[in-house]
Length: 300
Image (cartoon, rainbow, N blue to C red; front, side, top):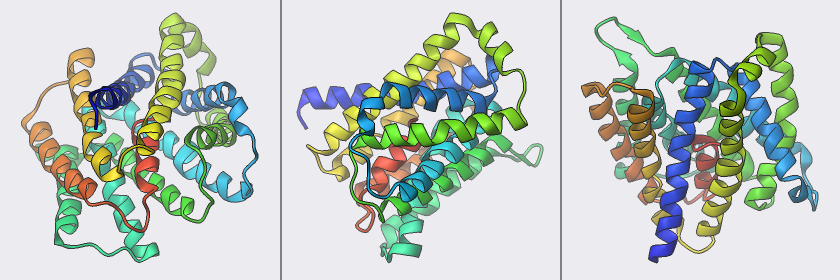
């Protein structure tokens, strides 16, 4: 990989890592209802990418199902998780999309794995359990449970993508945004309150956070990553994208004053080691998994 493309990937991972921290700040510190924020984000994606809705994909029913799994349902759970968990821990837990995608490929697509990927899967989950479980109080972080379920839901979207004709990244983003925002607004109206008040109180800072999520993450981040996928083998790119959770931890500590604990450090090393092992050995049955994982862990 040439230096220019590496710096582009570096910038993408930085944006993705910062995104989780900003989202955590919006839904936890600013008090914006998480499902409502997800809805406004997808509405923005659909609006900004309106031109990419054409040409219309052939199988809109399948695309709608995919949008629910990697869009509406996934992000509702992810943002609920970020409301209840620190961004640094969420950055690591979000990487469970990689082992989940491998397990789903084994179950539904006949993917076979060797002992190395098997060990990687076990390490990935063991590290997250170490981060999420507090032995002092015998409790587990409900926020990280939400994020784990979100990672699993996103991996189902990857399996569904296997049944669909290939689609460009920004066109996929446009349709996911279009299909996702209305169900999320309806769900927010039923389950949440104070949406308008939170927007008024958030002011220009909330507007900047929303613009960063839509333009910085969904359009620049995923568009740039897809351009790199077309130039380089995914087995090279996937390990390098582990810069994303590292940035998430760094920004969480610096910007949100999140504590550095032994459990966080040890769990991160264990989990990311497992994810690295999985990343360097490409999913043969579901090469699209890496695209879905980055859309659903880095943000959409």
